[in-house]
Length: 446
Image 1 (cartoon, rainbow, N blue to C red):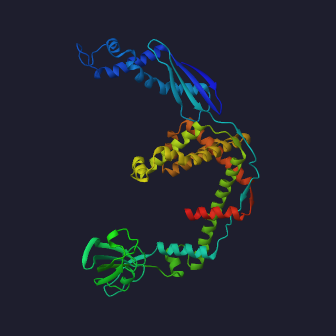
Image 2: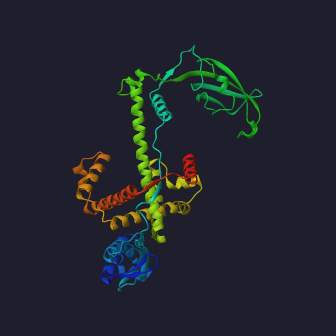
Image 3: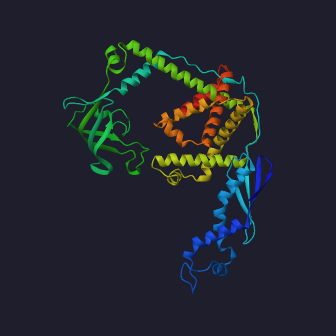
């Protein structure tokens, strides 16, 4: 096999690969052996038709496609390795010569890693993040903990339902004395105050007791989804079968002793404040790093080839499909439900793909420029972290990691160190109002 490399514009290259006539003949013979059992020609038993007879009947190219498909994957992989190029896209394959007795020739057009011209990456300005913890935040955290430790209690028959209680009830609805579709239910769960039923319905069940039957009178809204019920007065005969109340423990020293390692509520609050502070500081550190990398990337000059973007977008769609599958949904079902298609999904993720690629290329270039070193100890520590994450023994996971994967870990750690370098040298500045507003909007959207 021979490989010729031609450099093209915009970080593209074309490999011209020649596979010997002998190898192509071998692939043709293998294709014949696989297909002959399915070919029938009068005068020959099925599976016993000579190859020459098949080629005479159907033409010399009858086995070309299967032979080419058998050769291409390994031939391209060997050619890519031999070329020495840093290929960053799937190849665009074009067969230029395929003929019995001749060299098999194909071209592979690929994107190669583009050149990166770094701009400023040390001392970039990033927004300052406030890590102050307020009393209100501590109380909110304590309330969340209180709710997490709440108890559900079924009320006695003589106890009345109140807001936030959950009722189990049967009901039957009528309009002008006639039952209507969707107006009847058995063992329906309803949280009072949730506003999930028709306006006024839940309010009229405040004070009801288990076993009680109460008639609730409501008026359907004018914008109700059922055309025949819009604006109509209705009555629902409701029978309450069960009332469950969520009870919260009082926040005092006894609560701290029962639900923490502390003796007093004040000590517990102090620990919660410490936890919130650590969380905010970690978030601020990550934000500093993210903003710094983004700034360094925007300061760099890179011409990302379209084929590289397409490949990354495809990977992102495939990853999304795997996450959907883990939740029991196929990508086809998702697209049908959302009315989208694969091309639309690729277009949607492409901007994010470009950001990812730009950030990665800049960090790799910084690691190279700064001669960032990743030691064997660093790699081994990362493998230990992986073992812990997968709940495996270090020696067991080490057996699964070959030299190529170790090199990949080494490169990833170098990139992380480059990001740390940017963050450590970044200059924090107070947020301007126009910078702060979009962040708040983003938070609301989430």
